[in-house]
Length: 620
Image 1 (tube, rainbow, N blue to C red):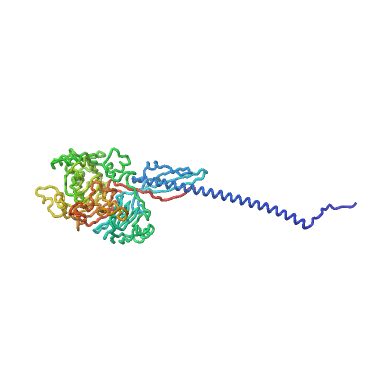
Image 2 (image 1 turned 120 degrees about the vertical axis):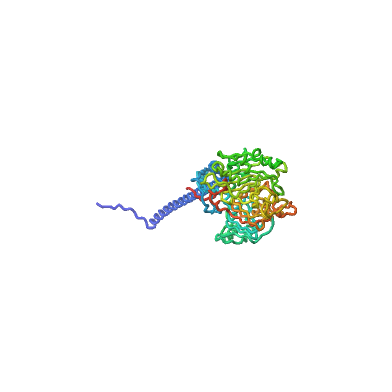
């Protein structure tokens, strides 16, 4: 039997290689397809991711913009100097097209009084209220972003400033002046003098001009202390340097103590609701005053509100006028059951004087309500627990209409010692307020220092009289004004300039000022009348040449005077133009460092506010 092998015919070698090559080609096509598909998938993923990132970034920007909107609302709410629960509740959510916005704004912790450690006002103290703003923005595709903005609402007492002006501030003294205390204006700052030295910071959210406002007169004697306490000459301003260069120069010359918009200084909001004029702060009570206005008006803060019918000045006989003032022409309102003086005590404290003396700047003779501060103190201290005042407001009705009421004003006299507080643990203090002009006769608050403030339309200082009481005594006029120097009502007539006596005042001042209407360097201004500047914010009427007026306190002006509107250097005074009704004193002025402590501020001290960003973080 024959066996046979089952064998397959062999392919030629070249045929075998062809089969292998086909397999490789197919494999490569598959792999290439995979790579192409993977690439397309990656491109699609990248595109989708990029689109998502883009949408996410836009949502983040929307959330940040919403947080900024909330911050601007808080900044507007600081118009009355403080943030409260109603301000937080009234915040509206931001509206951004294409996004659904949600917001949560809440205070974190309780307000704390502490020193400001950062920003243009570092070194001052404020009532600080931390606030967190959380804003979420979501678009139509579901992309969302959340931003958290932490801010600090700072409420700064006005009398913490050595000088605070709402309008342009001009400091152009002729006589040498050295001033210690922070100087701030919400307007422009004008500096020019042969001898003026500032020992603390100067700030403005606007511009600094090394020149006068009324004319081109740049004097090379303005000095500002640097951090080492060295007085350095001012040699630049906002006209000569751009903002970055201004900031750099200030750092080099003054250790950054002269700050403008270049440093990011923000305006400080006045203690009044929006669209309410600053003069409202010292105006009388009105039945139409809103709760917000009542919160800031000194008249509503007062614990002794006195209404005086100015018709008392129409009474012909002087003695009758004095005897009827308290019984027929005055109404007293006190809060908390506090006492008012009886008719006899009232007559010793309050006395009317018609056409009391000649007022050279106004070219008028004021009708005065003299407040005898010594008699007030004696009456109050006899039962201080039930009598001691903190804020006295003097309101006048029936003003004007005849020559006897052409200039109704208040004069504080014999005020060297103020009433003691109702309780011994209190620092006490007294704020005297009226919307009318105020005159201060002689030393004020010098015997025992107490927190004191004087607020009104304009404030004029009269030097210590030769007879401190300046009262009628048996004898002649010489008995009352025996010395040749010092204030004397009777002899202050027809621009008679008696030589002043050295006088000291320790009190914060809040009053109107006389403004230079425009900047000479701006088109259309012409040659404006000079308003008098800071050096004439406290006004004078005597020959103070070579005589020192010592002032310690805080100089605040939020408005222009509307009752005393005679110009500095009154040109209507024939023969006594160009300031001839007075000669400037030696100004020994300084900030009262007691006001750096909240418990030592005068009663009813107004505040200003600002909102500062302290932190920002996105939430993912």
